Length: 120
Image 1 (cartoon, one colour):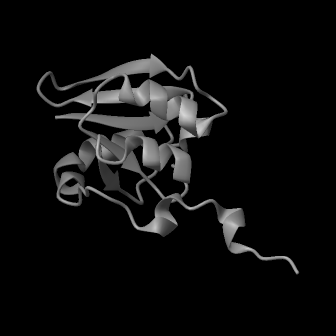
Image 2 (cartoon, rainbow, N blue to C red):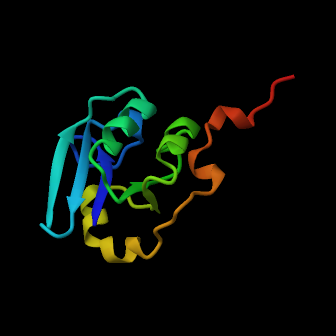
């Protein structure tokens, strides 16, 4: 399996638009291929870069995706929700994380925060 993780230079997991690095865990090779994120600042551009790597799944926490990046990836890759904070945590708990792999996410995982506030 090829699993994407998005993180910064300190290996802290980050939302797509804040990730400096797109990591691709290649389970067969037991290695993490690292790519500089060409889409930093944009969740959709980052997702575009991720999809070009043809991964099987992506590790996500709440707020990592937005509706646009979720719709782009929906049906093309699976999602692995996590509360973990670093790449090492993910690597150390990969088997257990994979058990939670999903075809789709709860809306709260990718909803934009500000969409929930109504101003009258």
